[in-house]
Length: 379
Image (cartoon, rainbow, N blue to C red; front, side):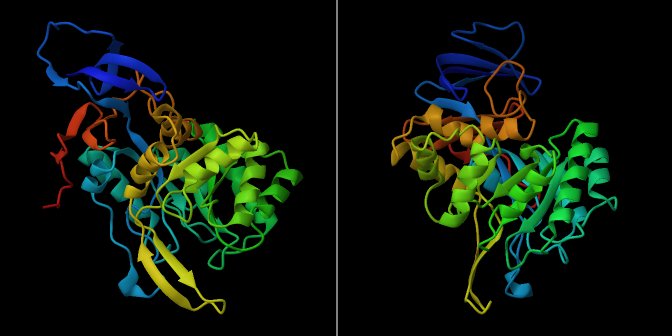
């Protein structure tokens, strides 16, 4: 049992100074003042600190992604401490370009490991390629029978994509949609979007030809170029979700402000880090020019940039990496909010927006900026 006292609570909306009681891994009470309790309880004084929901990073290559410059460029596996020091209490793992030397089974094992180490972890089946790599042999069976799997990953409009036909895209979405309904999950098709001029047009055509709900398709990296971003704005107008990648070109926060200026709803905009995925630059003839690896710190950095540089209020910036993400993944009300009954995933920041304390499921994994819990084999 943990009692956090005197915190300025952002749920993400500002609630004022409150005491927050976490019991059994859940937020039990949020009150102006919680007095003495009849049982032993750890008390954490958060005077002068801001309390927020933990971040949800829905796009992390937890087993490493890419490797597009041969075997020595395989990106490294994620470590627990990286999530802790960057405020990510819930992570969704997925495969990247490499669905050959990296497997969905390995991804599942890493997902389970992160849960055992102290955070919440989910995953997507599939990868860039098609037919989609799976555990059971079918994407819909993976979603229905494996608790941690929320949907499927696929790449389109990219020189590394499998170039699925519109009919194949429709069939994938239809299977995933039904699997989500049967299992009580979002049943989503997360689309890695590349730089091809086709952009989101294959998705628009698939939606026009069928009655598949727009929310099934979840394009990510939508801010990688201006043409794709315009498609993303149109997708938002049609009620879809778009995911903006932090650390990619301009700030995702600036695109949020532009959407607002245009009168486009922003409730379906989310942000993610693409952590441990490889980034790469290619010549016009397809030759690899440069390659590197992304970090999960991009999400936290973006929040600070939105507040400090773009002048957004903390309560206005937080939803894009907390409640909006939880709503889109059908994880509300247990994730993404500071609310009675929600999971005890809580962050404490000082007034300079420096992360001070990390609490996941009611357990303190970082306190006073010192990591208390690292991954099993971390030094």
